[in-house]
Length: 427
Image (cartoon, rainbow, N blue to C red; front, top):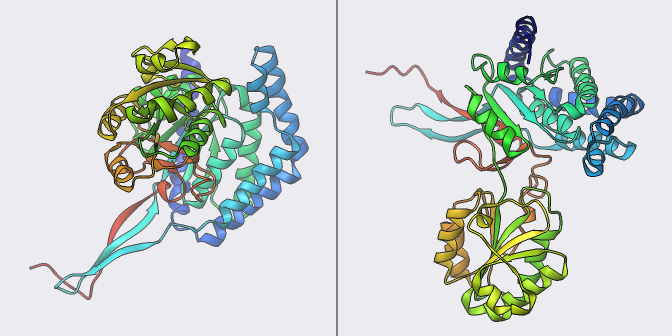
């Protein structure tokens, strides 16, 4: 726990950061696209030129991680290799090629009095991003905020503090050299949780908070923040196999959605099978998943279909669980309408897919399922900003207001009404 003096120092630190970010955001709002692109390209070159320094700082995090008992998988996610540094640089260059949404004018209409009224897309302002991920998130988040004309305050996990610090420092220096204002990209340089608490109070200077990480982190941010938050808590995604499904497609998509990469938010955790194909397509899909190493937690109907496998019975809690591993809940459902109702009750409203050759059932599913991403005959794993052609994403939102689904450049902006007149005065 921080002492009174330490708390005062933290409060002063955060005050300086948010005020600098607010001042930078006012300049960033009118920065031309070529200036923002020049800054991104300068950041990429700085990463390449400082690869050895990046690896040196990263080595400190790896050493601390080993001493703290981080798993091999966590250490692998943390490590910055030459290949990963080049990938970070290339990602920034890709963001520079993306269309700049800022300044776009839409919905122009002429009123009877001659006023021309429309909307202009503008930056949100100051965005705080709190995350527990790989160091490349620092680069990706900073790049997207810069290209969308925002100032960003980054706060990564303590396991990557040295790596994140040098990445943010290189980005800030490169952006200033390219003509962007000081404070456009900042990192909170301490790991004390009190710093996050102070940041979340600063709704006078910060316009939006985006948390990325585990459910505990996101819930804590939601509970403490006085600033609007865009987030998703978990990814309990569903695959529904309709009675009009193609058998091979059903097998391929169920396996890919579940096993292509298990520890991510768009991996499928739950499987629903229409009762009319449970004994045919459903049986084959469940067996195929088991052969891939997936533990199936099944309802009574599926357990009766496959008595020889002695499947573990699904509990009510299983249907609400994001496993992030090789476990899947599976059950039989009576109709598409029943599947929609069940998914809307138990999913995390992230990504769901239907496997069907029926246009009417597909459209019913698309209209009825209340999730950020709803697919027909495609793996849930495609719920990703890169796969959507948005470049690197800042996260995925399961909220309904402002942004929903993968968040790219456009989702980091808002709109304001504009009007062009010729001297009209209201009578």
